[in-house]
Length: 462
Image (cartoon, rainbow, N blue to C red; front, side, top):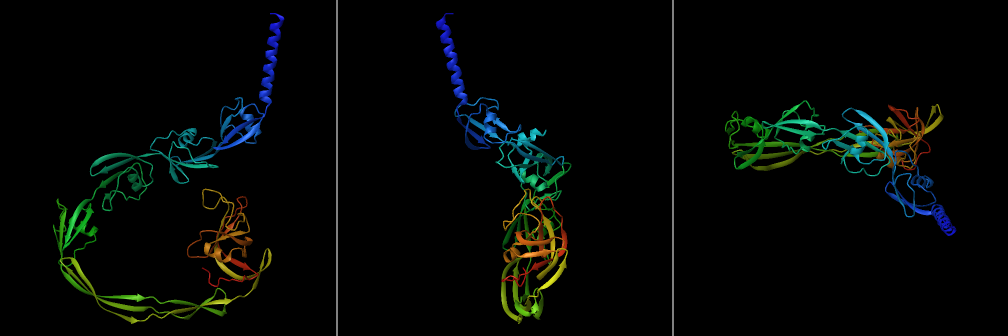
């Protein structure tokens, strides 16, 4: 090799090294699509994983990355990152719950990761709603899934054996999901609302159409009854006195489905109805707050209607009001409610409190992750965090008392700052705690409203 050739080779090597150093040392724009959300970063990092980490994005071994993590990055590279999320799957077959982290969003693939190979008849629920096994889950911080394996359903319909598959908990839903529609008159060997057991054989007797002729009226019904009398009873048509049917009531249903009912009668009816009295509430300044007294008792009124009802051959042809009168007029009831506010004191472990109203209530408790939901809620209707010192009341109470300071024995000082569902038929409060200091409450107690007395007082608690 002559001198000129060596010079050319050396020059080429130097130029190549300079180009490589320039390429990898130059800052480059790289697009990172994180969980479907694109962002652009400027980086000198050489590999995919280094670009992600240098961009301040957490990267775990469970995350899905495209291109591969150790692949070199050039200009205008697009990186796809699907981050792993907490996944909890409850298997209704075994009653077991499995929790893990995964970047997978296809329900069927998530099931495979925990050793479940679902069939096309199996069902997965997310937030209580069925979802497709092969379609991606919507974006979420975490996923809680319920897995239902399909069960065999043995149905005998009008003597014919039918084998079906179902994930439904009840017999009615299992039949509906398999396209078996029931009419109100069909007969099942097991109540339709019963829980389905794979060991059960279900017998379905389909109702047949019937035409019931009563006078000039034709009633079309469906019935699975064995006799004419049973069919009439199921249709709400009773035989009375000299009434009779063709065929007779103890005969099987006719092959042509036609039944005739014959009857004639007339009756006079006196209908007596009560007329409700009104209730009047009257403020009583001499009566203490939350006390009531009966000022005047109310009395129902009575109205009488004379009716003539005529039936011809089983057909009601007229219903005439012959007269109507009021036997007695209703008298209103008057209730006095107290508007006198008395301020009292009470010795408590926290010291002496001064209150203007004390209401017996039933107290329960909650925390962010113990609110009866599948999610954790850390905020309240007032904007305060869920923590000790905040109580929840019904929406009616909250509209009237939001922000008022109260005291609960055994709980302490608090403010009305959240809305809950309540317990029908009684006054109710829900005591807030954090998840760390949660205390279960299910007891009757007294809710003390602390001074100062508000300008607008709800005299009668809803």
